[in-house]
Amino acid sequence: MNPAFNAQQFIAALSHLEASHLIIGTETNLPRKPPRSNIPLLQQILSDPHSLQIESEALPSLEQVVIVDNSNGCIDTSSWKPLIKYSSVLEDGGPGDSLPKQSLLANDVVNIQFTSGTTSAPKAACLSHRSILNNGKSIGDRMLLTERDIVCCPPPLFHCFGCILGYMATATHGSAIVFPAEAFDPYATLKSVQEEKCTALYGVPTMFIAEFELLQNGTMPYTGFEHLRTGIAAGSSVPAELMRKLHKIFNLTELTICYGMTETSPVSAMTTTDDPIEKRIDSVGRLMPHVEAKIVDPADHSRIMPIGGRGEVAVNGYCVMKEYWGSPERTAEVILPDDSGKIWMHVSLTIILIRQQAHTFPDWRRGRNGRRWIPQNNRSNQGSDH
Image (cartoon, rainbow, N blue to C red; front, top):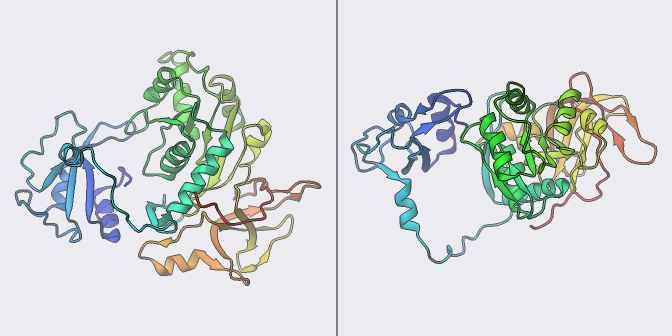
């Protein structure tokens, strides 16, 4: 869950999911804020902290709460009888055989991600084993990750950036991954890069700017970045001056740019490590393998917009989410079949298709209200069975 959620948002989200188990720290760490105790939140969730059984009027589906002491003992939860200590869970697990067959299928939902809610209230997007595993592999492929890479990943795990672009991209390529801190800390991030000799660095533009500020004010030295080569910048467009600084100071000469959304697991388009810097400034790259996209008339989804036309983005492929959890009406608003029965995820994002390149692929550049990318030709929309 997003730790920035207040108690009302947190309980509403868990109630919507009908969650049965909750794993929570004794405190929550947020960027540039002191640690926040989670005792007030537990008081709103648990009806009787002295009962040996979980009782929750706010979350009737709740069966167990596991508490992780991440406050170095500063917050005492020993009087909370229904809580299970995480250390006890580890001890009970111990070494042993793997789990018996779980009858899981590739298209089963494995991850429910709450969207950022930039265009409406957050929604619970259901992502499958197949969608996030293949998306992570494609991302790592495009970054040329290997078992020799060490990726520094300050973006959070409650977001697709951390859990798929970060964890899944590295897990599928045998790369190491470093999480500098529980919440974004520019000092911890740069320290991790230097001490762990990271070869890749992730971030959004505001993260990179905060890191450069530490160099400029003398808090961190301009050294220890010689092992860096690649990374990912996403979340918003990267200004040209920032991109050049990332190249020159951080040695991120193979930095990539990603575009996508939670509902598409999440990356639909991405640059490559050898794209010219101008393309990485002016675009978000080519479509990922086995992904299709089109720009349609918002008033008539059967009409694909001509060159120079402004329209709505629709994405098809293995990466499209299964549904919004418990919201069939909202799902039906965005996941729509075309006349041939092919399923498309429609994005409420305006894009202008500027021109057709003579010998390669369509070049989609920034519209007044939209993003831009250069998609590659993909004949198949089926992901692999990794």
